[in-house]
Image (cartoon, rainbow, N blue to C red; front, side, top):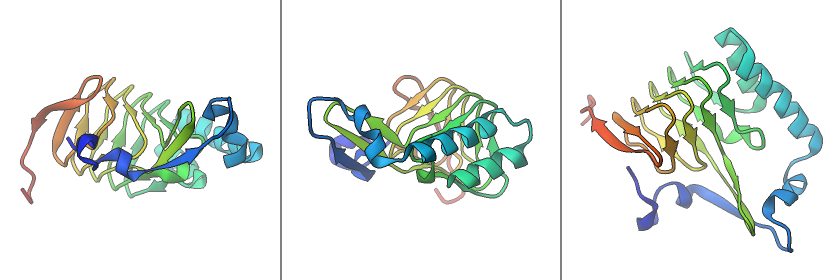
Length: 175
């Protein structure tokens, strides 16, 4: 997994938005996104979470601005980022499992950060997993259920745990 200590990885791909003043950054979200847009996003997120049909889920995700490849499977109650769904990229034939969450923002005390989340072609994100902003999950990679993904996942690698760590790797056709 790519670690952020060397300056690479997810933090290198996030954008910092300072929020001056005594309040934490969550108080500043109306400056970044309009209330109307958040309500619109939330309603489409509900459709993506609860619709029983993959075509309806993918339609709702596309309306949110998510990049949705061919054959994407979005699990029941899986949640894309409600503030910045346009930063989610789902490559062809990936699977996002039941109740997984893809976050493209993180509100901190004096700033908030945004970053693209990419789920690679034929990659799988397990049930209940949380993927943090700026993380890229490689082609054919697998994220175990209930994992917290705070660093990139290389292609054809399985990660598990909190934080997610490599547990196995399968040589891909290009390795």
